[in-house]
Image (cartoon, one colour):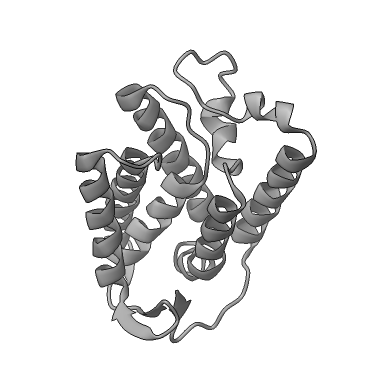
Length: 187
């Protein structure tokens, strides 16, 4: 996805989160045992993983997709709400999405997807008509893209055939949308 009217700049918090994710993914590649400090599980052997799981990713595809979404949509939201609010949303959505996923399904979880969906939810509420290119060629408004992602997660949550943390996505989306509605009153 590419934004149509993007005056793109990497803002402070977005840049930091991208850098942390890149560093953690590099560590995963060169020292795989480190994953025990990043995988959020129900037993909470390492409670810090409620936070650190956001920055780890299971595969190169998982990493690239999340980082592209953060790179393209993070600066848009951060320029609207500011770096502090953006960072707060990213962390809160990521933590609660991961915790919600393990409470409901019990298996380990890693990745920034819940935090990214928080960005989508908030940005959709604040700028629903923002134009983006889906697959680089199909112009759509952001609310349509967000609705497609939500439908995808609900559909696969129902049939349960993927290893994707669909409930984490939906929790992140809900937190982001709720935060967006709260912020919209102040803008």
